Length: 119
Image 1 (spheres, helix red, strand yellow):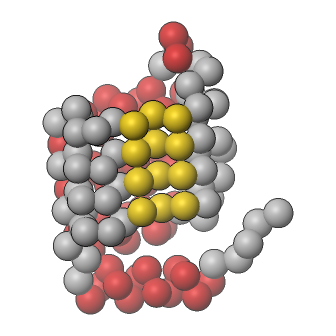
Image 2 (cartoon, rainbow, N blue to C red):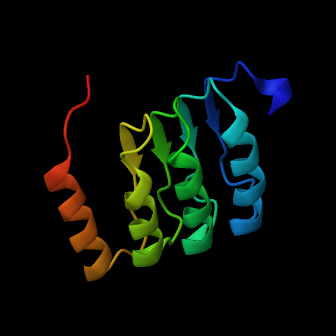
């Protein structure tokens, strides 16, 4: 995202095509140092797309609010996201309507029980 170095919020309203689009956007996000809010709801990311964003979350120091609702990421995607969710600046993660079953719910509950407020 060299041309977009000062973008603070991005609302994708369903333009990216699943995991392939997620990879392209994640490559730009890995270089961006200003984006605070990213809405990728309804983008058909599924588990592979969530895994792509999980790898970016570990190294991104500015993204605070990520909406991945309605993406059918399932248990596999949720678990991948939770592995790196605490590593960066992320403060809000919307995973509603993602076909999360018992494995993902248990992982999410465990993450929430360890969640600490960062100053």
